[in-house]
Amino acid sequence: MRSLSNIIFETKRLIVRPYTMDDLNHFFKLNGDEDVMRYIRPAQTLKQTKEFLQKIISDYAFRPGMGRWAMFSK
Image (cartoon, rainbow, N blue to C red; front, side, top):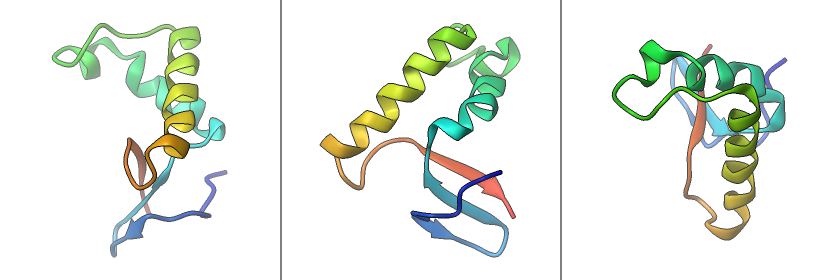
């Protein structure tokens, strides 16, 4: 289940919020997909994705209001 706490903003169709570790499977679907990542960087393994997600989450404390955000359709 997606956490709706700490919503950064929302529109009629979208919710944008900080990532949590609960997002790992969704995050891996993107980062592990070679077609999605083709022009960004090499696709990551689940372990690499987990480490990357942990870094993103820890960076929120050092750079409040900045970073990568999870975006979901309502």
